[in-house]
Image: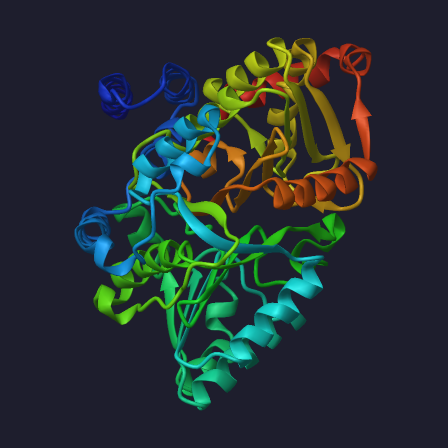
Length: 475
């Protein structure tokens, strides 16, 4: 009886805590109350492990301090260029302005952005840039494997460090957990590469007691000499992705960027590095000159220490700006109400909305939650295509043949609330047409989902999809 009374008090206490959390959406609050109330003991444990996006007091304090430092000295570090918003058509300016409100990074003119032809070409170009580096190379990946891609990248960094280039390498403690314990990681460190683990797990029990173990750094950033940066979805791994080989190949997209916006990605990397390893912003120089002719672009970084719902609000602003067409590709689609409603609203007002998702996902839970939204989207007039050529991992959004959004963020609640992400928002008709051509290639390897097909799903499948979606806010 005493244990039962203690359990009831704990359950009621957690429910009160959930009800007092003003930042939670009503759907998330309801999902947690259901889990805590209906799963004896395990519901309490689940909330304790995953209920709150908490990095721990000391880590949160360090990250907040670095963010304040960046905002205070940003003008000294970002090259002085004219205001780029007048170069953006008026209907899209509010989305760029909202993006600036997240990190304080404005839209900058004078950038050169090159779409890499494929994963192999992107990696070869990146390694060539590292081999040509004169001053420094900064690299951050969520997943780094010791396969051909991971090994070749590590060898290039070792060569650079041995000729006197300052090399900083950061890999996520969970996504790269095997690599950061590998001989190759130690070899990089012995060669003079400065290595660091982002959000290290260390002792799992202590990590769980102090923070959430599933708060991860999902960014993919490379900066060479403060002049070149890479943005996109590609981790430091072969497309075959041998740790999940049966879902491969992973289909990614990468952009090579030069120009003033490189400084923003440098600051994003610096915020992660200084928070974990110390140092000052003066350790991260930028030499990026404006390119002529140039593209208007800005970096958008998100994470659990940024303003809540920043990414879905930006997504909604972009959807609301669309006049003719929107095409979206994402591997993981577990949307909140903001995202679903903005997609449906665009389709209802006549925008040609196309979504491309993987037919076979490496997460059955994510696949079920994604398909729970199909009926609503199709009824609104959204065209849904399921990619069959592997796992479509490219995260892209194109609008009206002019605006592109490319990066590491998925359209799921994990990217919205739990992961540190990095993305590039740009305005340019030629590059957007190139990205749209890549999206068309994906569609060409896909099968279109029809409303009659969804209506024919058996009851048990619909119940499973909707049950998973119900707890989507806590996935």
